[in-house]
Image (cartoon, rainbow, N blue to C red; front, side, top):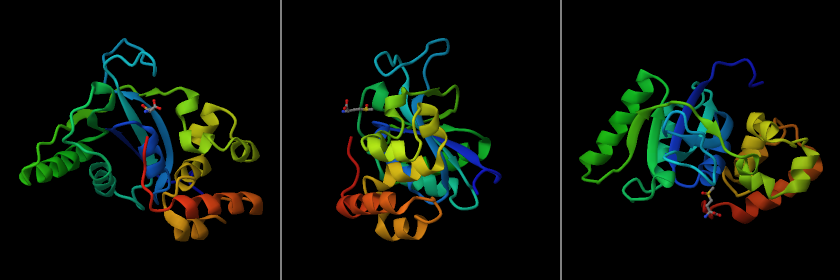
Length: 212
Ligand code: MHO
């Protein structure tokens, strides 16, 4: 049901990319997610082992009629420390895809600064995005190999393009919560065994937050 609706992209860097992959993956309105490298020098091909001046980034495909860019920005600000100084790999960036995203990103940044916070976040136009290695895509979900196999999620491209993979990558670490999972499970076309398996994980990890 997500194939033919208008969608938009959002790209953020907010530390290790495994956490926002799970955070956003189970957020209503998120269609797909991918993790990768953004914001570095042209002509350089970043990899995890040789990341150069790129940042770890999450790129979202979202349905703007279900979740707004301002709501995504609120999640961005609420789920990392934009005042903490890290090496470039883990630094805080908003990579905007159009003028409206740029304006809304700047507006929220200015609201933070008006509170006296020393925000290090930079706002830059989205340039080339390099997918991270397959083993980083839906990293939390990939720790459940049998589940991935049962769902036919075999390659990195499968994991990147699958809406179900995005949702479950959040649910397996409790993101989204049990009520949302129960109301959504039938739409994801999961079989009874998968539902049972994922339910116990959501219940176990709900409320425990994200870590890398
Ligand atoms: N501390 C984590 C960071 C991974 S992240 C994708 C690790 O190396 O296991 O940068």
